[in-house]
Length: 203
Image: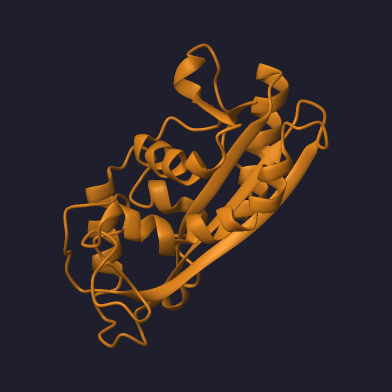
């Protein structure tokens, strides 16, 4: 069964392809295969609202089953920022580097790991052309460093250290990150649904 991943983010595509390897009955395609399609603007106030909007819009426009993701970094000391604006924290066209630099500046007055606590959140939504079929959320708690470390990952990974780990998400290998991340935790909550998807039980 074919399912469309509603993103063109190459990092997310690679992570999802790795997670979906255990479901050989599912064929993952991405928005790169639909160059004429234009996703909706992210106008929701939560990750769930944005992921739902992405899934519904793509499923109806493409007439296909869709898996959509919305995720980001939440910092309590910054009243939840960057949150849903994680990918554009430093501006609409900001790069990952610019977003990280702004975050480091905004957190410069916070020195202890407790003050710099943060978590990643991911909401995944599966939709058919007719309706939303599944919505799940996963989180990964940790803290943010005062300087970047590591060359892997993307987004804020070079600043984020998960609880009980010493390395940032940009220092651990990809397979480790895919096993412990917020996206993986959300994905695990889809496992039972994905196992039955395409066998006639879910239509």
